[in-house]
Image 1 (cartoon, rainbow, N blue to C red):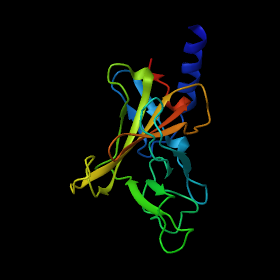
Image 2: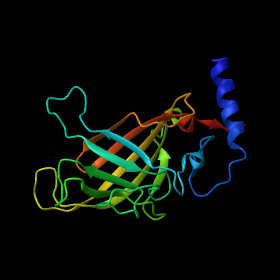
Image 3: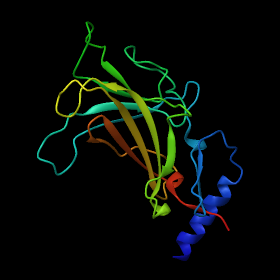
Image 4: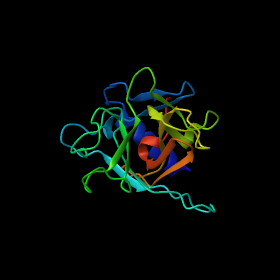
Length: 194
């Protein structure tokens, strides 16, 4: 318990000098989070994860590649079929255009002050971490296959971990057109204010 408290305090002290660019969150419960150090800019490659099949389900869900950034548009090299004016992209490697190297690409989320949210994963337990949510382009159909456009949502869950390197561990579509990527990281730790 003492080691965990010291680790949390040291994380807090390391964040005291991070300038805020709009990618931080004060829970108003004595916990503060900042994701600024995770932002990729310029030629730095965006984050990638290929996943989709949810464990322990009867169905085998399709895998997609997700390319995303934190509080900014994707950075680095973007596939030709994709828009670089998005914070999160869903790339379907099974569907190709005329060239087999082209993939179908969907805007899973945009970084926009009006629609992007950064909040606690659990309102009752700030130690679980924070989630960053983007809203993207419409899905053309609902879960039953009916034409009923609904906006895609892209959730990044930064869960409490001692790892200083933010590496996505999975990307699942728990609900139709809502994608959740889990990233265990120190950036999901509670920074207690004394």
